Length: 214
Image 1: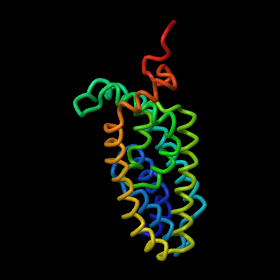
Image 2: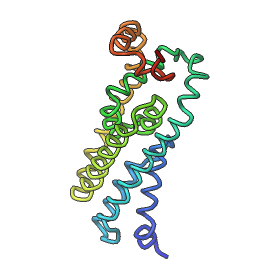
Image 3: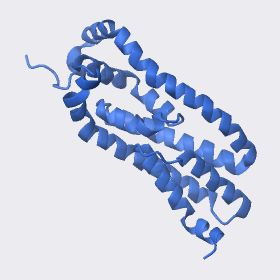
Image 4: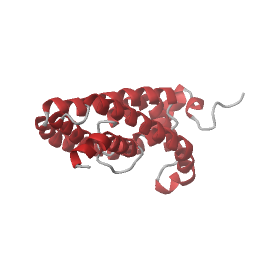
């Protein structure tokens, strides 16, 4: 079997595997794989772009769902047990839950387009008890948008899109790093103010123990 025939048969599934595994934290170059497959589809017509887009979207959605389940199943328990060793006090964990309650949808959507954050957004959302319906809505729409932008963009624009994507990836990586380091620093700085705000809005809504019994 020659290389072209091999890619035409298995290329879509390799891209899908990269996308799904990257979403649950593995360092796979899913974005690059999607773009490479789209260029291959445009130049050889040995790979159906519609099939690539559909499978890519499905893989992103399923990867997000798996990451969210892992975070919900194991992440919260690990945060409570070991979080204090890395400065994650119960109060800061509570702030994280509140932030995901209020802004989690926007974070999950934006993170799909940001290096590093794309690998951990679903797990973080699950670990911080983000409401499942909000997560799946945000992650699903983000998956569709991301695959369409990078898949169809590369398919129709080819190398021009790839040349544009390279410097864009550097900028997006810097934005991701700013979020990764900036948000925890802000939480530490304004911890008391945030906790007061949470208490004013109803602390029971953001407590792992659930609403207090009266």
